[in-house]
Length: 232
Image (cartoon, rainbow, N blue to C red; front, side, top):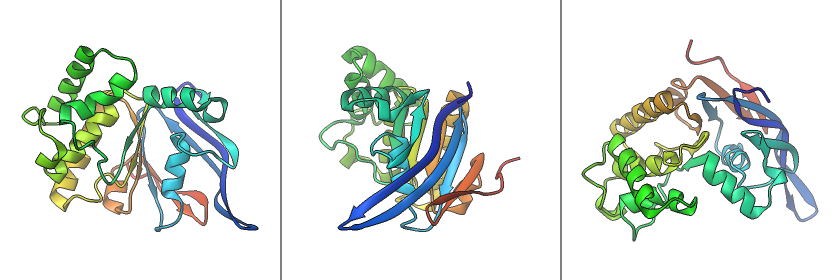
C-alpha cells in the first residue's frame, strides 16, 4: 500500500453457500483507493455492488483475499476492534437515510462522536458545525419526520462525515431523491470531498453521477472492469 492509499483490496472473493452449492458473487477483485479520490462503482442490479461495499467497510468478511483501511486489515481485528476502527476511519451513506427517528438532526449527527468517546459538549459542537456546513442550521432540533427527503439525506451525509473519516462508502445516496434535490446533493458531496480530502466510493445506477467521479469501475460477472476515466 502506498502512502496515498486509504483502502486496498487484494484478490477479494465472496462466496455464499446454498445447501451443497457455492455461489460466487465476487471474484478476485483488486482495488486501490487514493486519499481524496472519488470512485464510482456501477453495474446491473444483483451484480454484487452492495456486497462489495459491505466488504470494504468491514461489515462482512471476505471468502478469500484481504481488505485494509489506512493500513489495517479487517481480518486482523476482532468485532469490538473492528467497530472502533470503522468509527474512526469509515463513514456510510445509504439510499435510505437510516436516521434514528426519536432523535433530532443534531443528536443523530453527534451519535458517532459520542460512540467514539467524545464529550457531549464537543460532539454537539462538531455536529452543529457540520450541519451548518450542509445548510441545515435552522433544522438542528428537528426530528427526521419533520425534515424533507433532501434534508434527511443531508443529515445522513453530515453523520457520515462528522468523525472526519478517511473514506465514505455510499450506496445510491441520491436514489430516493427527485432530480433537482439529487443534483444539489451531488454538488454538496463533491464540495465536501474537495474541501475535506475524504475519499468517496459511490455505488450508483446513474451514469451522470458516475461521470462526475474521478474514475469509474463496473462490476461484471463478479469482476471489476475499469472504465474510462470520467474526469481529465
